[in-house]
Length: 268
Picture 1: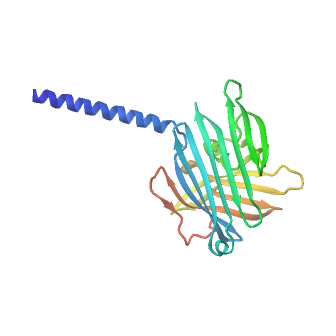
Picture 2 (picture 1 turned 60 degrees about the horizontal axis):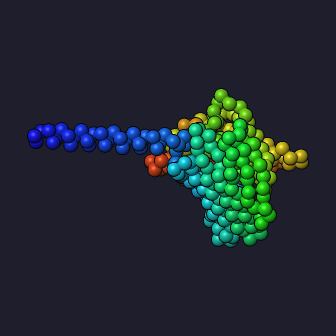
């Protein structure tokens, strides 16, 4: 009888472990992107002027993606500019849909507030989104056929889709209270050095479609690190205006990867 009790106990324990492991695997499998924290240095003319923290966390039905930017060093002593943004994204059957976005910028010369909520009709093909909210106090009401993003959350589908086999990446986005399109094109692959290791990075570029605006946004993505951006560069009139470079990365609460302080800004 004693052996029988032990057998029943071990059987129940093993079954519980299997069930718990299965549930955990299912929960993890719901999310195609890992949770991560990434810290960037905002550089202007080679000097670090701000720090930006990006956090992607898992929710029951998708993701919360947030950004916090604060001035650094002397710039932080002279001004108190801040940027805070958060996006809530649903993931269902492999499709990502933006549900809500809030943006708040505070500076001595320019304050900006944006807030959007999106209601999706999933019975249509493609899905139809009704967008309501405000841009700098002005009401916004828009309709989108198919997924729509904004300057923070568009990075999520880009991280999922970027590869050497795909050339173009168009994403509709809400920009200043209107719907526009980000047209990214894969232009090159580079070897970059991060946290003591060499990686291949994909460079995708968006050119501003507005007449008279010679501006480009370059994003370098590292496929080996789930296409988390390594470098974000802004060009104006053919010249580098500013860049954000990855300083520290932690994926799924794993080991922190940190860029050495003696790594030059132009080592790549």
